Image (cartoon, rainbow, N blue to C red):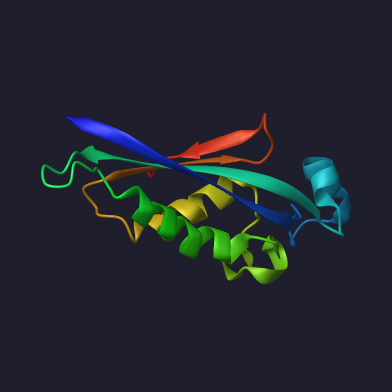
Length: 136
């Protein structure tokens, strides 16, 4: 029997979507308002889910407090109230789109969660715009 457990978190961060190798006009055409040279911010909502077998001793798939602590250490403390482009080395050469942010979060957490557990990250950039990444 496999069960999915999930933990919600949130962080606030600014970013700018652009490519250094493109002209301002091309960046503006592709990324629109998200290409603002002065950046713009989001109140990101994050749902991290872990799926696996229930441990017969504890009754847990994963201790949800451990998952909470991992999210705090790897995501919230790294990204909250930061400029993703300027303050976060993960995005020094990576355009901080919602897709890339979700993959970065997944990779940071994957390294800290048992390999026999499946991991899924859902990142809401706005209440209506979100991405899901499960590896691969």
